[in-house]
Amino acid sequence: MATARWELGMAGDGGPVTLRGIADRLGLHVSTVSRVLNGPTGEQGRAASGETARRIRELADELGYRPNPHATSLRTRRSNLVGVLFPRLSEIVVATIYEGVEEEATRRGLSTFVTNTHDDPAIQRERIGMVLGRRVDGLIIGDAHLDGAALAGPALDGTPFVLVNRRTDTGHPAVTCDDRLGGRLVAEHFLALGHRDVAVIAGEPFASTGTDRTAGFTDRYREAGLPLPANRVRHCPFDTAGGHRAAVELLTGPDRPTAVFAVNDLAAIGTVGAARDLGLRLGEDLALAGFNDTPLAAELPVPLTSVRSPMAEQGRRAVRLLLRRIAGESVDSEVLGPELVVRASTGAAIGPNGL
Image (tube, rainbow, N blue to C red; front, side):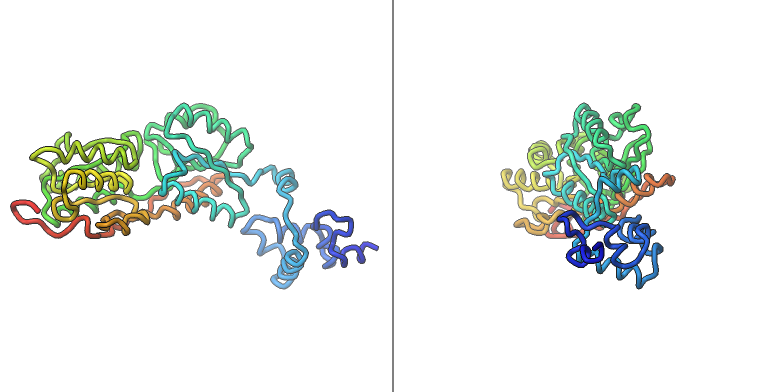
């Protein structure tokens, strides 16, 4: 009777296909089938011979077997759920990093859910508590402030977490772009073009992305004997409106800079609007560079020079680093390399009298 039942779809009573049913059909022990289909990625290939594992997977696919996450959670005492915190998922950089997180998590048999904190420390603490209440195995945190204040205290004790995109001064493991090097690459490009009077639209001072990119840029100019005056560094939100306001402040007046580095592409796009409003031509009257090389950068009327950061790869690496922490390993932060992509917005070299 049992054999006939499995021949008719493995679940003649209308219930789901089970590991026991697959094992009975193939004449295998249920634990072997379980390890092949549900074991950790690194163990699945060792659970059975290649031919046996192939037969198990083929039958499971044919019959439409789906793992029961609740049963797996009870067995392993893990939820296979990862919480992700970001300032705003509406931002293209954040969304691209999250795509990398989700892609790698899915490949590893994990589920993710994301929440926005709007870069507000009070909301950050509240959302961390909410996420922990979902019994997550770990967290990926993309909204960290340099001081790490929202990560302090007992709430996160015993829960593995890693940072992504931003680092803290408190030394938590993080996967980031080498933001200092990215800022330095822009400075070297401007110096090679002859720009001595430059400015930075520096983003928010609490975020390592803006702080490190600005530091890399200003340090290189200081090394060249051209330190930036304080009024040439303007902080603003990481959005087009903030970039527009900061650019108007920098570009209004007779002693305007000949080149501006905006520490993300959204602020750079705001600068494009300010330059337009002030009658300045990008690449001719003003050189402009951004950061992240988002898809919009190459499609602007004057294509934007920008530092390409490995956004999705940061997300993938963060999942791998978190899994190592969940497994109890000691981990180090990872820093990924940037690349300067030169386009028309920075124009050609300037002469002794300016552009």
